[in-house]
Image 1 (cartoon, rainbow, N blue to C red):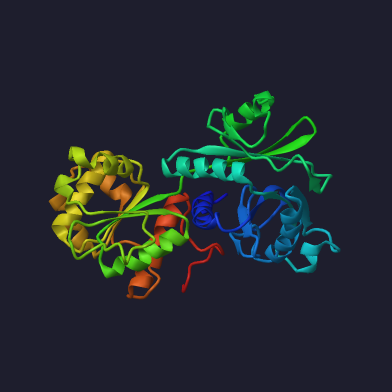
Image 2 (tube, rainbow, N blue to C red):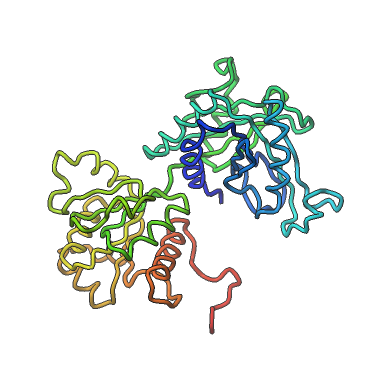
Length: 372
């Protein structure tokens, strides 16, 4: 499954530095067989040779940076294939574990690309999905006409394109492909092969409570490419100087949250995917839990503390919907991995939350029980 949420973190990084350097974007546009990353995964390389993001398990990136130098010189796209099935291929010589083939398209980012990517980031911040379309010629490495990006909405309508004649494109195939609602699609239009990637909004994690034990949780979630919001009305908590990786910090009491002056906060609250209650205060946790139940938006709610504390919080919340509490609230929160430091607790919480948001079981991939 493509982790689209990496796009959010990478684009944020790009816009923090894009004024100073030239950039190339490398995208997996197709694959056959197995590979570490899925089509649509991106990597950004700047003109001083720094790279961000991965299109493999870390084994192909150095070679991609070398090819990026050609793109910086020509300002034209470049397409390369890595075939782990062929013994004489560069990727196979590295001893790559996967046995598949991937095609990577390298594109020089112009001012027009930057404008398009800025709109893509804005749509992600607004919780809206988009499609990013790239075209390439698999039989031709030098892609003079393939340095274009096109962004479409969920209905297949073109929103913006770096192609000067994008309005003349024949998009009946594209519209039908998008209707399938897949994370990535390959199709052919005229002589070009098209790569269509669905770019979803990042997961929105809200953490209620801004104590020092929250710091590693926010940091780790941000590293995953999630959008993290910290909420705490107490003046000595949730300080901006400490939670630099949080997208937002709101200082509001649960009793005042739905007041008219907080309309923008409420709008974001209604888009959250997951929440963790870490106020260390029974009354506050119960109040926030009640608000989370009222919107019924969270797919995951984590609650710190033992079973007795969970029972007390649920009683104080006054929520009569026992089925909802059993389905959504995870308390004691996290997986049993051992450790009592904030970093271990954060890892435990995020592992559980990650598995639920990705509809996974959370079991060992080997199929065995750990330490059994």
